Image 1 (spheres, rainbow, N blue to C red):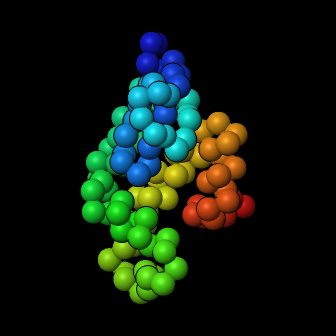
Image 2 (cartoon, rainbow, N blue to C red):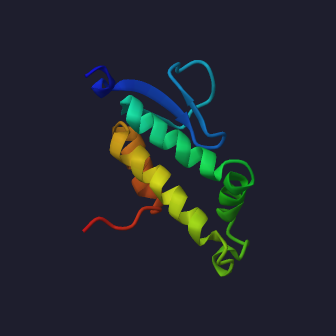
Length: 108
């Protein structure tokens, strides 16, 4: 089946952009994904996009008491799914960077 073929994509987590061109925009992660995986990733971005991503980045400023805001639970879950996918599909650099963020549940 054609859809099984993996292509290279460049992901900008900050904007939720998924591109096949390395030069078209700034990008954070390079991944190999098939059509289905990209569709899944797009849906996750759509679910969360806009204010939530800004909240996420703001949350990494230490003085924000982020963890006391329980409304963020569902959102955190989506973020973990996004990074989980990027980790699974990403190149070595992507995996290393995501590991260093300590955002994913520890793999046993």
